[in-house]
Length: 144
Image (cartoon, rainbow, N blue to C red; front, side, top):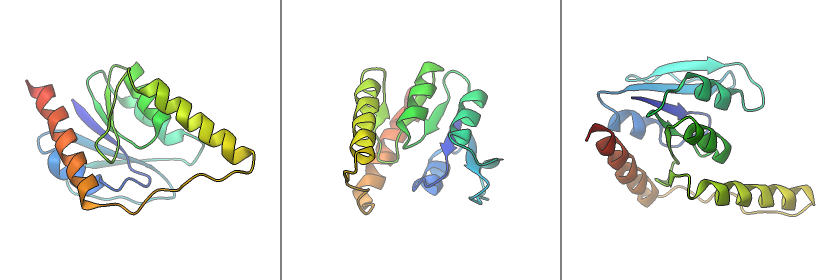
């Protein structure tokens, strides 16, 4: 099993690497970002719409874990029989991904029509703790 991090804008890169001891960890980012972290291999992809997402999906294997806040990438990871988790510890499943994709679509439609949607809140320690708990549980389930 490998851990794939959609590293562009991911607030839990260091936490994920720390929790992933014993697993191969890959940070995948585009050329606009520079990552060099001990304990992880960085893969830099040329810029392009969803280029990082497709790079992860094309490299991952069933059973791998993808850390992403992108619902589209999460859906693709699930389709490849992988697992996906967001930066706040929400585990994406076949049961919740359709609703999340629909919610994203509605937000896009509102913005296209000139409306505004809320941006992300400031990150909290509780969100880090939730991620740590959920991610650790995923790793434990994989080793059982």
